[in-house]
Amino acid sequence: MAKDRYAPKQLDEVLGQLSPRMGSRIAGYSAKSQQLSQQQTVLREVIGENLAKKCRVANIRDDALIIEAQSATIALKLNYVKMDILSAFRQQGLAQLCQVKIQTSPDAARRLTTQSQTGSNKATATKKRAMSEQSAEYLEHVAENAPPSLQEKLRRLALHGRQKK
Image (cartoon, rainbow, N blue to C red; front, side, top):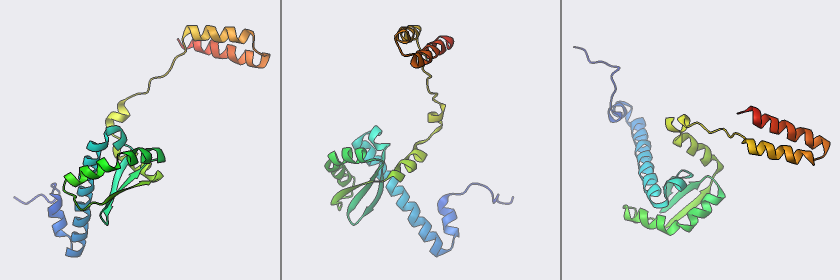
């Protein structure tokens, strides 16, 4: 029986079939990507899930860990735990690390949201707020003493709140 050429193959097998120069480059990119993924996991363990969603390990270069934060406030929070991050990475086998550099990158927000979007995020529906009957009554009472232009708008808002029920 002939071998199915469309059957799924291991990535190593496909990379081995490429030209040696191209295959080694792609294999290098693949290894670097796996390293960064493992380092992101270490970072998540150190700083917690909420903060890890807003930053990522960008690179390790010249014995420095480079972390991209999506905003300046996230970068500030990361600066507070910089030494904890450094010691955790050293314990994981990166003893040559000397410093942690934190960069603010607005593009990181875009990259992080595309990485973190899953089906579960899309499935959760946002709750719509509804005005209570008591709030509608309060608006009616406020409208009694309001100027005519505002009075009409407040009454329409109160009516709108009552109709939604």
